Amino acid sequence: MEGADNYEAVAGINPHFVVLDELKDIQDNFIEVMEPNLLAHSAPLLAVGSPPDNFDNLYCRLAEECRKGAPKKAWYKMPSSKNPHISRDFLEDKHQSLIARGEPEIWQREYLANIVVGGAKFIFPMMTETFVDTDENICAIIKASPKHFNYYVCFDPGTTSCFGVLMIAINKYNKKVYAVGEIYEKDQSKTTGKEIYKRAQEIWRNYNLSDSTWMKIYDYAASWFENEVVMEFDDAIMPCVKDLRNKEAKLSSIKQVMLEGNFIISDKCPMLYWELTNYRKDDKGRIPKENDHLIDCLRYIFNADNYFTEEGEIPVYKTDKRGFPLTPQDARGDDDLDPFEMITSEYYW
Image 1 (tube, rainbow, N blue to C red):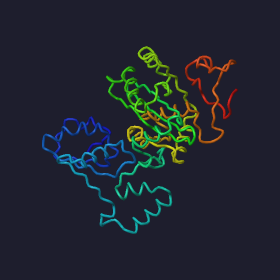
Image 2 (image 1 turned 180 degrees about the horizontal axis):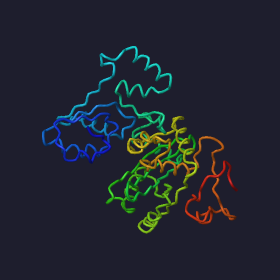
Image 3 (image 1 turned 30 degrees about the vertical axis):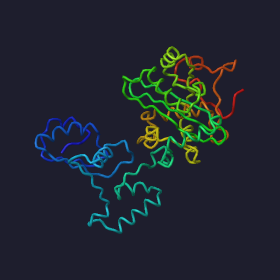
Image 4 (image 1 turned 60 degrees about the horizontal axis):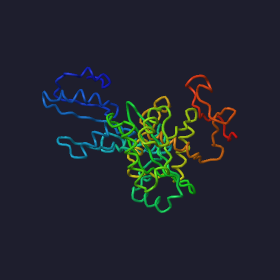
């Protein structure tokens, strides 16, 4: 018996049979090390456990392989009620208890073996497929009244992980937010500023709008990207407004837009949907800085649009006597302060 966390300990063994318990808690690295070991004796592998609370999990990937008809692989979903040794009274009591606690997703996962995303740790638990519409329908809505919208494209350059780009159209009158396009590039050979910008142009030009109609924003930490765009395309691109000290408030605003039914995602934005459905706090209640490239873009676009769902949420940015935003060096003498940091709920004039 070996713990799955110590996956290096199983390298080179020759098992006749392997059982993985609590599959949702096992790292991908363990499978990568163990699978070659199965070859020596054609050893079968049995993985058991309840489903996870997110799709970014080994359990879901293996289940998907089985559903797609992978040879010699099978997935069985067995609810607790199938076990004749478990009391039906116990199951009914547990069901009612979890419903009363407002945790029906735990009942679904732990006792019915259903893959259900959600729970107290999830930041956007309301995000479901009901928010997704076809690209064709969204294009028709926007092209019917193109002047009713503000158009944004935000670039989140990632030099080592992922280059994310998100395109959003916001109706100026009913405040509906439409996610119309995205780029989610992890191949580092394809993340040059020139190549990403050209791909973005191809997407936003599908709406038959002039390039100047789209407000282009980038994460100002990646000044190299702005330089490359200016040199290659002679196009204006603006640094984003961040909310480093008010991130949760901005995420709350995004949740409110969803709850009001004003957030629509094109089926051409699968990775934005994936990030939103899997975005959750860690075990210590902190918001992790991972798998959030397009969510960051969404935040920056909301800031650029001055999009707020409630009165009193309008930010003021620290300025000098002329009214210009302070640089980090002017404000604190170092790079720790966001020059556009929110500090009050009223405009500064």
